[in-house]
Amino acid sequence: MAMRKLTFSVPEPLAAQFLRRVASRDRSRFVSEALAALLEERDAQLIRACEMANQDLDVVELEKEFDGIGDEMAEPWK
Image (cartoon, rainbow, N blue to C red; front, side, top):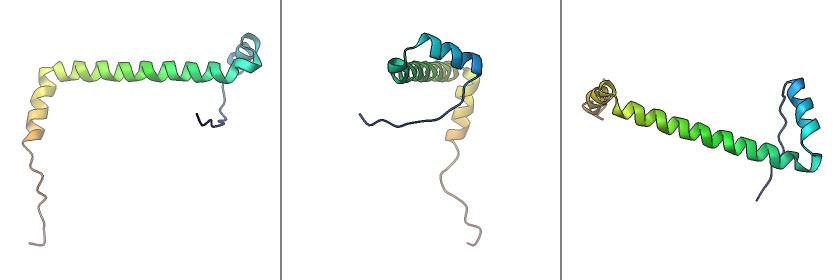
């Protein structure tokens, strides 16, 4: 797998804790796994939010109204 170096900033107390608790040889893997887990959780939250919105009767009614809008664009020069 291709790897990419990134540079970012973290608060000093968090950086100190990270450096103290995670061995230098494990830091890239640790950060990669933490990012993957957080991104997966955000995806799951988004899916849950979409599912909840799709069950909301007001949202369903609004979507029906938008479905009635045609794709044709009025051309002012005709």
